[in-house]
Image (tube, rainbow, N blue to C red):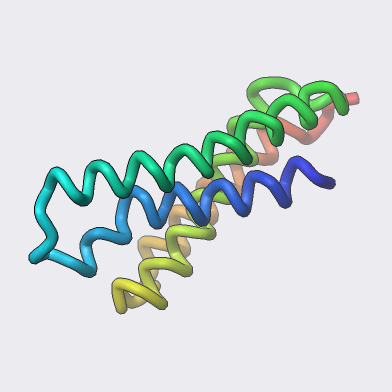
Amino acid sequence: MPTIGLLILSNVFMTIAWYGHLRFPEARLGTVIFASWGIALVEYSLAVPANRIGFQAGLTGGQLKIIQEVVTLVVFAAFAALVLKEPIGWRYVGAFACMAGAVAFMFVGRA
């Protein structure tokens, strides 16, 4: 579904905008903020159409939001491991399990 693909791409950009600067602690805060806003513009340009397409395809706002949160957690976990060199431990696994439960509440039994 194009919605999920666009949400994945938008989350990659937003994760870089929010957390990428952590790799550059010497960078000035004003520069980091300006760069992050530029990256976030790309994120918005992907997220807004993703949500519109998903809604028009029959997903509810709540379903779109929970998809977004799951994608966010997956993208951030990959970013944390690959870029920030943080280990993926049991807390990530627990968070994934909780998110799976949230997805079930939003989708199971819906016609």
